[in-house]
Length: 111
Image (cartoon, rainbow, N blue to C red; front, side, top):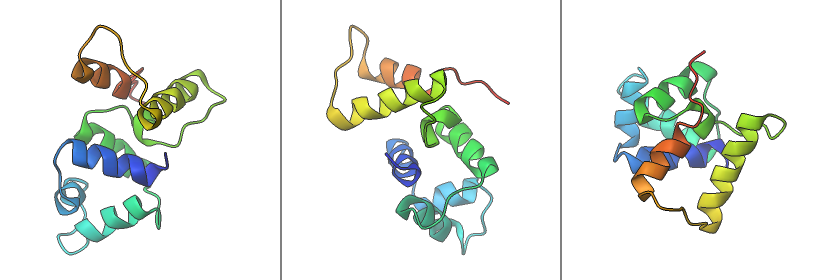
């Protein structure tokens, strides 16, 4: 899943409009929805500070939004989480909400 798709997924998960999310990222009212639309379409990639800010707003780890680096343990885990969502793998004995909270915040370490 590309970064734009991840941004779109978490925006919808929280019920945010593109304009609201853009405003929360401190974009001007005129540019807020345009910037988020460009990110979601993959026409533009967010700078790290905006990616980190969106992760905070969405209450997830920045790793849940970024394109995973499978050469690292954390990147590999987030790749597996993304594949799980794409192919409908099922979780164990916790609720979907509890599991989503765990996986979206997996090793959420602030730099």
